[in-house]
Length: 158
Length: 222
Image (cartoon, rainbow over all chains, first blue to last red):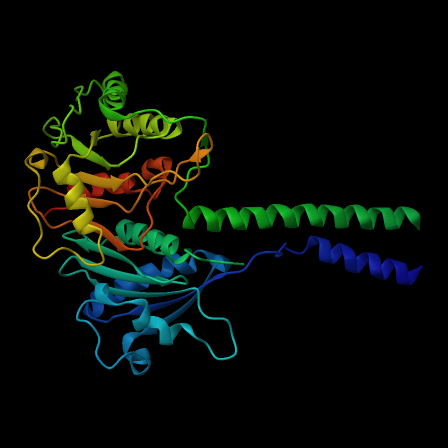
């Protein structure tokens, strides 16, 4: 009887746990291209904060460009908008783990009111977002982050 | 004892239901973010052309007293009233009936709020400009803006993706990436290129859609 009660208790605990079948986080790497100085870093911080606010839905890995520069091609285009999936491919692979779902590179320059983003999701090809002459305040950056997330989901598989 | 087992099985069944719901929700969330397709299937298509443009504008006029704009028979850019934002639709095939209905909702939403907007079909110049801007990189040099845009505080250009499926089960594929201009500058204030996805028709005017930022974009000083 005691054994049955223990099994029942275990099953009840299992039943009460959050359901996770067929679910996983979107795994993305966010890279600050580092061209916008302190204001640019705050800008990327805001975008990162949006992803962190998504909780378990987004598993964020954040890197500065300098930290991953060694893995990238020796010559990089002047604008991140010209990056291709071949440019970011070395960053996607992870030793002993599945590749990341998306690589996102942001060049945010609030002082110049420019924002360039390249999103490399799983399938071939990259998506780009470009803002000009727009005040990069919190609502705008949250909106951009939302669109980055949508683009990063392209090709997402469980 | 059997009662206890019954309770356990019932709880397990509840858990199974919860799992299914969660899975569906997660999948829907991911799919919703990744796809711009609307779900409605159409039994038939309906020509957009002049009639549909007039219908859309008539809906706007009834909502907010906006001027009725006729798209005209040609492919010239349609003039719009000064101070009214333009939502320009680029499409090569007639809209599905579900898309026309969705477009009516879009037109009604654009007619409300502080910044008014109107929906027009793209002229040839507008379609070419959209194609140039949604290529891999911004065009060099940037093409001049169509003359019809000069009095608009904001212009949003989107492509209606060709529907998927075959008659009579054609489905909307939603919209392509958006392009936003604040005339008179011929540099887009927002553009999405490469393999960027767009909104659905309802997503366009929903929370997070391009139109949700229209007032902010129009207000932002050059």
